[in-house]
Length: 269
Image (cartoon, rainbow, N blue to C red; front, top):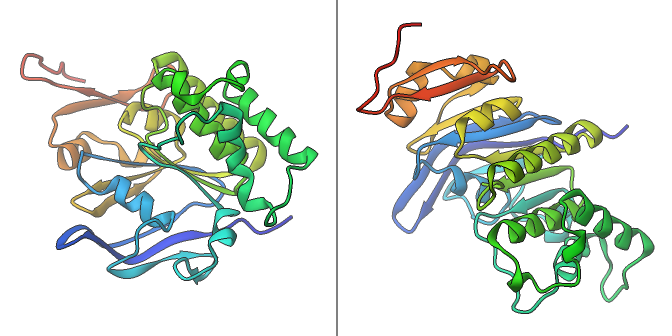
């Protein structure tokens, strides 16, 4: 059995121009687990994920993969280890669903090589896993937002990487398909040992599906650990500036956040 890949950040600072988004951040992604990154809008979640995928160069510090700095290593080598579903991917105009999903196989192919039987099998399994086989020959442009999101997830699955990074994978999906996608990622983790790292806005789904949470505020990690250790009323107040009650989820037993609006009063526990 091969050793699981190890991904971490050391003293990582990220900026767009003069605006610092992430400042001196340290974290280690648990190998073989599902990790969710949570926090308020603008706290640096997506920027951090892009840096972990080597789409952003650090201002200082570094991202480490298997003991070596991520930046400067061959792109194809990284693409065989790290897969990324960005927040707002854009498909080439007129491309068919199966062709787009098939692009996930490029890191595994030699230059000018044709698709192998294995490549076609991986694409077919990725289409089936995301419930879009019936759309294989249709143009991505013709699909709804939710259907397109599933196409992008299928492409990420087709890349067959040991680490999969997803930025808001449930965007545009109704509740049924949100659960289906998160169940699919859980299957991938449990059956193949894939390390999953995802940014999620829905903190209750993050708590239900993640083995580990990192909570960010102002570009720094406030805390990290198992959902039951991390999610407290104090943490929600600190990270989201929101008053809330945290109770056991009656379905999963994981923490569930019940926000209090100005027109609601939290009953004593």
